[in-house]
Image (cartoon, rainbow, N blue to C red; front, side, top):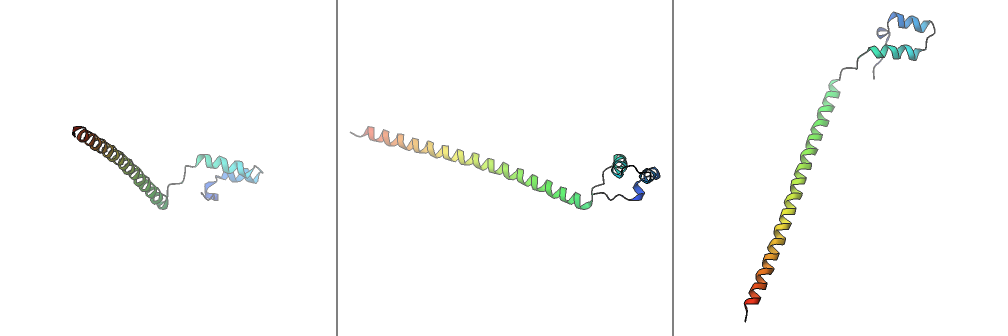
Length: 97
């Protein structure tokens, strides 16, 4: 939040307030000409931390997705192995006299 002080109001702004103009209108007009406050070191550190957390979260989601794919492949391989075992048992039983 920006602290407004007399230094940010022009002499014309001060005179307008003395003449009874609405303070909100005078201050709003002054703020239109002011740029945003530069980010503080605290803001920069917070943004950097948030960016690191977001990157870590994205990496964890990718790893989680890869693990899900690996689990699915393992389940398919296990099912194929069981089907092959069943086919071999059936073949062995059909070969018996």
